[in-house]
Length: 283
Length: 320
Image 1 (cartoon, rainbow over the protein chains, first blue to last red):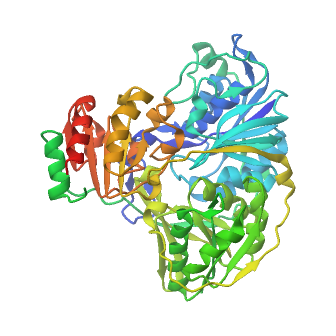
Image 2 (image 1 turned 90 degrees about the vertical axis):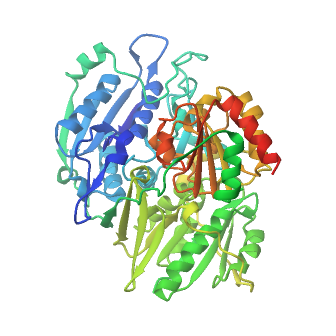
Image 3 (image 1 turned 180 degrees about the vertical axis):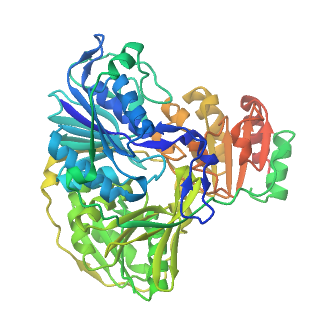
């Protein structure tokens, strides 16, 4: 099974409250914040690695994961691709682009061009990027390819190397189960890090992955060493012949107003109920 | 002048309240630009839902009956075909809207503004405001394509009230899509609850990792939830640990809520959680650690062991 995983570098999402906006309001500045792999992509990478390995045997890869990142060709983007390679992905692709020239439509067109070149069985990607929070690119890619998309996948099971997959996806009102015939695009939910979220027909049934709470697996020291030798193809949007006309134009960014008022520390439950009832008048 | 089509969200043959939030946004766009709006009732039970949706002042209600479970591949071609006659397509940014609308948008070569918090109509020009970076930045975006596709944040648009009258209904043809044959719907487990919907409850009580077990949610959190007539929510950590089911998650990747009262119990307040609740009118934190990040947004903070404080709070609420 060959899987394409897109990974975006984003300003450290855990410190997003430190973001600033330029004086003229036309740009978000992340000065002082570290660039990180979009956590949603990190989770998708974890799912893709599980789909392409025999977890009961050490380092037993049984498929291929190709990473693609679209962004500036700088040390940060390269570091994030190396991080994914160190976790176990086989190859990387860096499509050089200025963030300001991208929107979900352009991104999905670029990814389509990469899919056309690489012919993966699956694309597994974050359902959103932690910066734009749009939830659009994966579905848009699937439509451009004429492929099905399963958004917010929380459990992925295949017994035939990804040709068909049974997938549970999260809804607002519960969980739906679908059977999808590949090739397909999957985006993943928070629950994809569960020890039993992926069954690939190779890793023995009942194998329990380590419990992951924050993100995907850590790279091993050996993985980090090996990643240095793995190839990263570099290309431009022009090389791919993609239409680069954006349809989203951000005209202004603002920091939302801070919540007003101080925090009132209450004595006990009775004091809290009194304040909520008589002062805030919300109960 | 922008003519708007609202894509309804049906659950078991009825329009979810999310649909009515989309209607509110559609009205703002239509009224602000001198246009009008229609509603597309699509899915299983679209006919009956169309009758219900006829009372909200739409020019007409389009009906597309599609049997069997929902997949975006089964619906998107019909939505896109119907959308050809409109300038703006609107749905709620629920899991459904975020799944379906981008697919229809791609068929129409339309840009998508997702999860918007406001519609701006200035000088006849439409733009949309949307939270980004887990709600830490607010962006204003114009869509340059001929058609706009917009999903709206439920907590920022009040549900439209029925206005009386009866919009005429019109059946439309269901369009086929080869991609739909690639996805077989096997089933859905709908979580039923007698409690108010998390998305539009006046009071939300959420629990976090500090609850330590599903039983503690049942025994500690639920009595308070019910004493307040509240909806129950949870942090990602509590959902991940399996204490409660995933659809209760509040945060950047779960539901975004803005109730009159939000009570966060044993929740430290990671930035991803704050993204889902910091628009609440009054925020209460109950936590052992008074330095927890939840303090940044809390109006009232009870520094206490939740296992003592919450049952006492439940008792005190019952005495009101």
